[in-house]
Image (cartoon, rainbow, N blue to C red; front, side, top):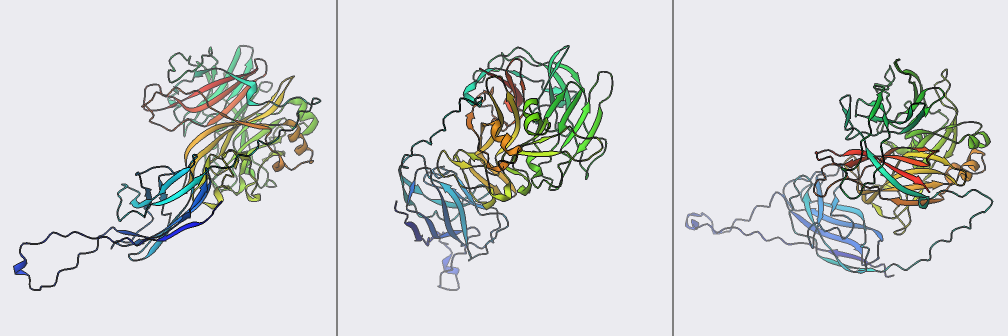
Length: 553
């Protein structure tokens, strides 16, 4: 492929049209007055982009612009795509100037960004114009229209899959699951609304029936038990046929009596219910805090008595990637725990980016822990799966993204099917499933798509997609025994999942399809329960969560 680069100096001459005064006879000089320079003006100095690209290829563009006006530029500027206006041919409609940058009148500044070539081959126009971020108003002339040739990407043979070992139990995949139906949750419990709630899910099997532990609310979170209604399949945007789970009992706000570094430690992540001890294990995370915070606590829940809290427990100082395990708590199968983890049956996970990412995991993560000791402040931890950020190791993902402007955000995709975990990829729920004929660790991921950037202190992505990652328990066993490093484990399979959604066209007021923040599995019925945010519109200006249910065939 010809990798020549278009590099053109493109001084743009702007001619100002000034109305002629009819009172010229009163002028004291015959010399015409020079027009005043406009406050906002811009001239393109140089454009540097490849002349040829492959379909879906990520490339870097540099566009040097001179401030030709009288007003200094702060960082509130961008380039808007032209030909036509705001087209997303190159993966985005804008290129930001960047946080903390400035440009004096007469000086030059480079707008730099990674972009992505179109999916279809052809000849495409590359053209931009300076605009303000706030109101989008453009000024100055557009950069010259460059033509970039996009050639078809050569086809590659699919990777060979290793032959199945008939002596081992098969590993679960997405093909083993079928959609069984969904149900709604109450919009509010004890005055706490569910519209933006991140909630875990835990299954309780008691003498009076099965219930699910769910949380509702934002700063104040109420934990309650809900009955499981009849399942109805959500088809299209019509969610009226769905049944609503009823509140069986409420347990109030589960939180520790004392704050930690000014923060209230409450149940805002995953749950797991221990029926033998009538105890709900719950986890806590803080999306922005840089230091170590308690990650696990427990509440004994008995009818007629206030919750009795245990903990909190921290990830030990010996674990440098403590944020890898902020997502939730689940349980390991007894046979697996007895054989490989020294009897540690609880597990913490599930991976993804958190602010100050050095302690996070660039992919799904899981560690086995023993039942926490009330006399200690840390958990006894054994790493099973983690992709440490500083090691520049990342879980694989699809290539439907590009990182526009931050080196730490993740590696650019190799092709449409092969990429690596980025700073806008999460796993907030996971479950270990062990059936007589098949098994596997399922991690539910939420991956950013399209343009990703670190724009003015905020991580952004053009969209999101839900994926299921399946891991082979034998690989986790090898990590537990020290035969493999926890970051050497690859997913056995992964698949994009499109959850059903009850949002009518034209009523999209809130975020797009939401993240999955909780899940649990019923071994008896072979049903997987999945809590997803922003799924039902309910005819209001808020979007509410829904529980989707999948059956292992």
